[in-house]
Length: 257
Image (cartoon, rainbow, N blue to C red; front, side, top):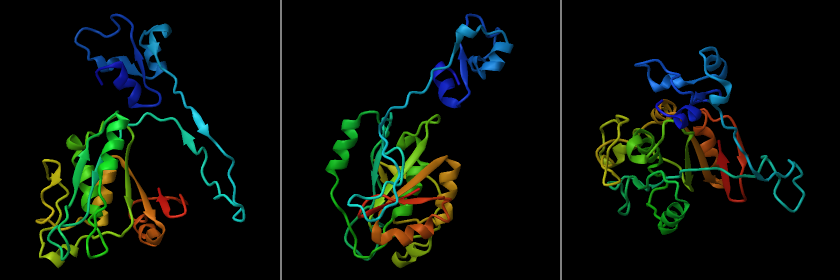
C-alpha cells in the first residue's frame, strides 16, 4: 500500500492519515493506512483521517414476487438495477482445434480490463458465433487461462474479481483430451501468446477441481449464464465450484451464482 487510494480499496475499515510528518523517518507509507481507532491512538488528528463514504444509486428496486400466474416474470432479486463502476474485459472460446470437428480456437483473450464501456461493447458486437461438431466445449480451458494469466487479463489486486461465462452447451473436462491424442495433464499455468492459448493442442483439459482451486487461489467469483437446457449440467458442476444459490434469469437463460 503506497497511496491513499490503495488504502481505501484494501478493506471496509481501512482509512488514510494525511497528516504532515505522521510517519517516522524511514517508516513506509503503508503506516498511514489503518483503522480509525489505531490512527487516532497513534496521534493522527481526526480532521486528517480520510474515509470517503460509499455512494450507491439504486435505479430499479421492485418488490419480490412468487406469483407464477401473472403475465410478467416473477421478481426474485432485489434490487434489479444499480449504478456500478466496472472495468470489464472479454475473452472467447470454442474447443481444442485437434478435435474431430471444424477448425476452432481454444481460448482467445479479446480485451484486457478497461474502464472504456464503448471498447467493451464494440468487441462483444464484433464476435461471430462459433461452434464445433461435438456438443461439449473448451469451457474449462478458457476459465483456467482467464484465472491464471493475471497480468495479461488485467486483474487488479484491490478489486472484486468476477468471471461471467455465457454458453449454450456443456464442457469437456480432464481425460477428454485423449479423444484427440492429447495425454499431457493440465499444469494450471498461463500459456498465452498474442492473446491466444498456445497449449490448447498439447495439454489436456483441466478438471473441475483444478479450475475451482485456481478460482479460489486467485479470489475470483465465477457466474455462469447458461441456456435453460444446460441448467442440470451446471447445477451439478456448481457443487464443485462452491456455488450456494441459483435463480431464474430469463425465459431462455439461467444465471448460476
